[in-house]
Length: 325
Image 1 (spheres, rainbow, N blue to C red):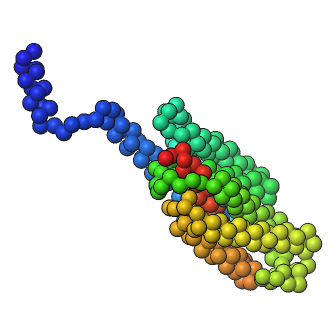
Image 2 (cartoon, rainbow, N blue to C red):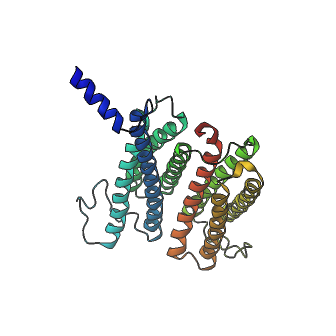
């Protein structure tokens, strides 16, 4: 016992003092950081998957693999351009799905931790549940030979996953900045802006799948409507007015964040999203004036989904800041 006491005294003389609970806290902090990296990776991969889906649709290779889950009855597709375009989309989808499911599992296991807010876990589990539905919808879309209805539902589910991942990432990150009072009305305004952006993406998908992309052959005015049903012209005009509404909502939100102390740490993100929205408008004009080139269609969808993710992240960062403080 004397020898043990001697070694204990010597060891404590040369070691740095440890605070109570520190050994168990460090692994928890590392786990939270790893979880944030996993969430960021899942979100980026989901956005890339959405863009790749745009490539598949814009190039007309939606049935590049005519069966599912195999491709021409094979695990590795034959040397056909359309097959490999679709197969690349499926491969990226598999990688993304695994990340989201892992994120949901980690969030579910940590949901009982009283030190963590509930929002991140709920968002991650919701994304994991939605991605399971998305896999089924993707297979159904191919089996039914890509009808517009399943394609639209597929897009809506993808945007739901993007929004949940962005919210999870925002709600789970460490709080930064001061503890300025947050006006609830500003939080509600950010929510409306984000939801309007989501509706803009969905309406854009409906424009494409309903055949209304060139119902108005000019921009910014509609021009002389093409020889299409009047309803398609209304769909195109509705999409343009919705884009204008999102621009106005985001402009007000940016000015509000800039003038409010509660906007500290979020102004740069809001400004970047405003610039992205301007670029998105330019891509929309290119779609019409250049008669739907593949590059602008793909970039238009990629920018739209990124804008929605950014606004959901902005909304989540502002709304959950107090819970993370």
